[in-house]
Length: 312
Image 1 (cartoon, rainbow, N blue to C red):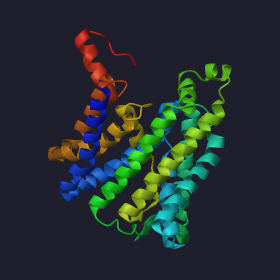
Image 2 (tube, rainbow, N blue to C red; image 1 turned 90 degrees about the vertical axis):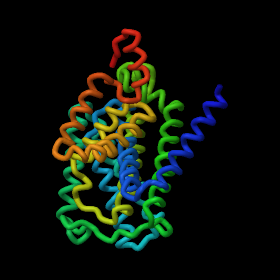
Image 3 (cartoon, rainbow, N blue to C red; image 1 turned 135 degrees about the vertical axis):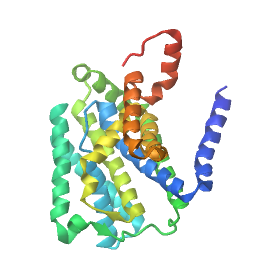
Image 4 (cartoon, rainbow, N blue to C red; image 1 turned 90 degrees about the horizontal axis):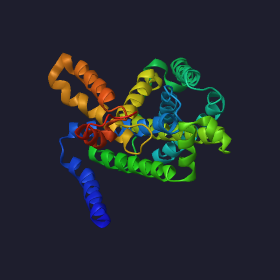
């Protein structure tokens, strides 16, 4: 049974990689954007889903990763892979410095601090015209050698996303993951049994910042243009929505949610002006009937057939 399951998963993985290579270019473009949203949702879920802190300022690290990678390539003329790695390091260092301050707060106060940090970076990137291009942003950001077609970007993004999912899964199954769960369920109880809650929360924040840096760097080199809107609140809010509707605190939840908030609105373009209201109604239905996210759909269906009420 286990062998058959592994074969099925391997076949599904191969299909997910290969089938988009035969899609029209626009559909491949949408899939690449969905990978970026998935990466970013994963970064948000490390703090929101594991530690239990509402994080609406994660766009700060998305923008830091994007600008760092672009500036390394444009100003210092680093190769794109080196710029990419540099952006991850810068994002994680920024995450460590900001996290040391922000994680002293809890819940709404933490949320306000993270939003404020993102707004500070937005204003800085807008006013530092000589370095960041100001409101006009940075253009002609170089792309990696050999990665020019949309299908090549899809393969690269898929590999990065798969690596991030694998890392999250390994962390969840480790001592670190168990510490995160204990903190999310009851921080006071976790402290009572000797869990270093500050250290583990900071670790989640730093790894999340690195993930956001990956998403930002990938976006910058893919689109070849960035501006201060990279730090906008809308990025963070959409990532939180993706995490919640997919299933926060799970490996596959951000993947499902990130893909949904990207792909579903494209299918709804046929509805023209009703596209966003329909999408909003769909999100409300998911939250009401599947409070634990789309990842819980099989259990919700089973409970509904058995007359059992779903618990949050």
